[in-house]
Length: 445
Image (tube, rainbow, N blue to C red; front, side):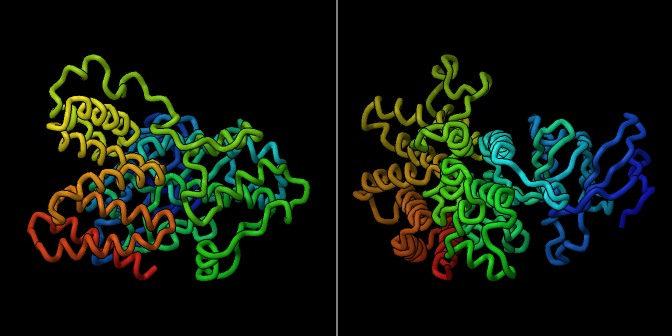
C-alpha cells in the first residue's frame, strides 16, 4: 500500500492521493528528476485474481501502451512507466492536469447551461474520434473520468478498462465481468456482448443527460439499472428540463437507443448533430470521416506497385495491430483492384471483402457490414458447406444479426457451430470455441 511520502524508484515522491480509477489509485507526486508535479497511477492489488494474477498486469500494460502512443490535447500525456508482473510497485506516470472532474463540479452545485453541455460534448467527441480510429473503446465514460481543466479544456481520463481491437487483447475482460460503471453502461455491455464505438456514444449520452437533468437516465441497484439499460426507455430530457433545445435532446435520446444500430454511427456524426442541429444525421460513410495522416495513406502510388500478396499481408497486419481506420480503405482498394482483374482472383478479392466488412463492424457500421457479408455469403454458398471462409463469413453474419436485434442470428450461429463440430478439423479449434461462446451468450441473453 502506498502512502504520503512514499518514493518510487528514488524518483517520484507521492504527495497526496488524487482519486481512484478503475484499476488503481492516482497520486499527485513530485518528480525529482524533472522537478515538476506529475500524476502517478498504481494498481489496486486487491483486485488481483490469485488464479489469474497476470490479467490485471496485462490490462495495466495495455493502458501504458495506449497512453504512450497517443498525442491528443484531450488525453493526459504519458511520461513514464514501470510495468513488471513481479513488481509490487508497478506504476504509470502522466501529465498532472489542474482541474476538477465533472463529478466534483456537479457536487459543488454547478448547473450546466446548454451551451456548456454542447461544448463539453464536442470536445469529448473529438477525443473519441481520435481513439475510435484505432479503434480503442473507452468502456467507462462517466463524469469522474471527464476533467475540466483550469483553462476550460476537457480531458478524458482512465483508459484502464479500454478495449482494443487487436487480436491478442480482445479477451481481457477481468474474469468475464462486465467492465464499466453501471449508471453509464451501454445495453450491450450489460449483456456481456461485444462493444464498439457506439457503446461509448451511449455512455456519453448518459453523461450529457445527467448534466442537463441532474440525474442519470436510470437509478436503482445494480441489477435494476442494468435491466433498465437493456429494456426501459429513459424519460425524455425535456420532461426533466423543460425548455431544452429539441435538437440537443434529439441527439442525446437517439444515442440512448437500445439497439446500437439506432444510435449515431460515429463520434463525428454525434458531434455534427450537435454543431448542425438542423441537419439530419448522416448516413454511415464507407470509411471514417476522420482524415488519415499522410503516413497512413492506404495505397499511395508507391504501394500500388507492390505485389498483391504483399498488399494483402499489409492490410492484415494493420487490422491485427488494431489500426482499423487504416486497414479499412486498404481492404476496400484491394477488393476493387482484384475484382477488376477478373474471376480468377475471386478468392483473394473475397478475403479482402471479408476484411473490409470486419473493419466496418469494428468501427460501428453494422448495417453496412451485414449487407456486405450477406452478399459475400450468397456468392460463397455454391462451395462446400464446411468451407472455412464461408463459415467465418456466416459466423460474423450471425453476430451482426444479433447486434442489430434480429434473433435469426442465433439460428445462423447454431448452423455454423453444428458444421464445425461435425467436421472437427484441428485447425478450426479456435473459431469453434469463438462460435460456441457467441452462441452460448446469445442463447442466455
